[in-house]
Image (cartoon, rainbow, N blue to C red; front, top):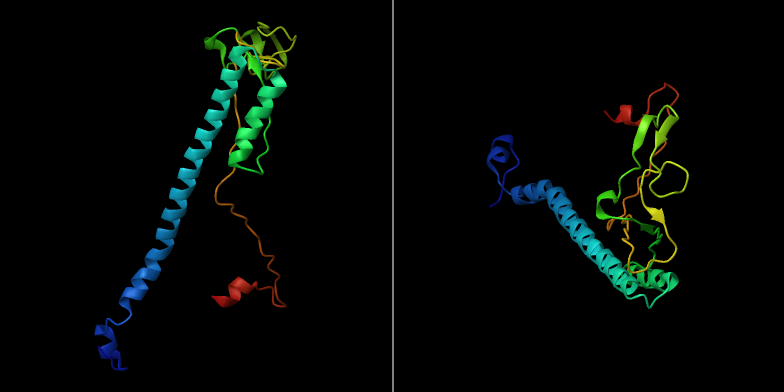
Length: 177
């Protein structure tokens, strides 16, 4: 279809409408695709991390490996997935499942005030936000817990442009409007 250039015929001309519609939908489609990739990456990263922790627990339960060997295996498995990963291993031992990740109970006073009494479950002489006792090895009778952070699949970097006012005090953005 050939469109004339007068105003009346441009109103009914549909040439290029598909391109405009696609341009409007393209950002939404890109966000959807990037979001799907990010969620898939997160699921895969959690799966790899869980596998590394499971392998470490298996190694620790046999008693045939030292804590250093177990740590090296975890780092190796995590780095096989993400070469630039920063792996920090903190091992804590718990006496039972009910205390995992819980703070030591305060019997009187409050932590915020600085005056308090507490049950020192891990016997280190200070109140801790986690009841676990820090251990160096990791043998069969310990309950071990692992925590970590995952980097994003899509790295977003924001660069703020510095806007200088002109002689009249208007910024560049104000002049464009």
